Length: 157
Image 1 (cartoon, one colour):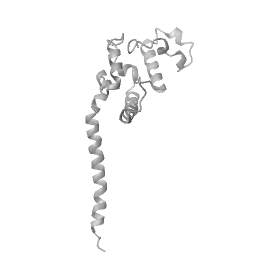
Image 2 (cartoon, rainbow, N blue to C red):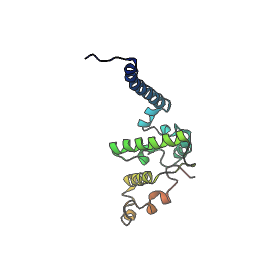
Image 3 (cartoon, one colour):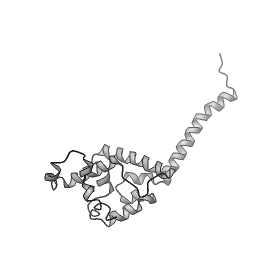
Image 4 (cartoon, rainbow, N blue to C red):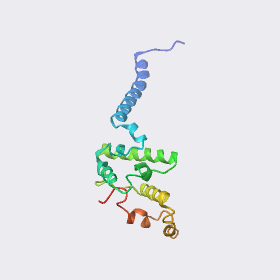
């Protein structure tokens, strides 16, 4: 039995590759336009690719941590997989919020990211504050480092 190669079958076989090509092309263009590869770096300027983060970058440049820590040192876990999973998750949320223009102004940190920041503080300063943290419950946000030291990473607000 011969295969019926009707015009309808030809067009149906072309639709999926064309749609995939369009999606890949749009995704690639968007990634290039948004300077997507810069987010894989440790360069703090990447965090200000979208203008909403410029005040945070400006504050960090004037902060006490400017000479010793970049955005990733404080805002991502210190293990390879955790770092890039967090960057991917945050990138998704940031790009969605920026594209749809539904973000809080001024930008606010999510609870999960606040825990990551607190763990980063303790990663570098744990020995210094060990007698204080010994009495705290793990991940106790009421007693997080940034509760008293909110201006350390991004300067005074």
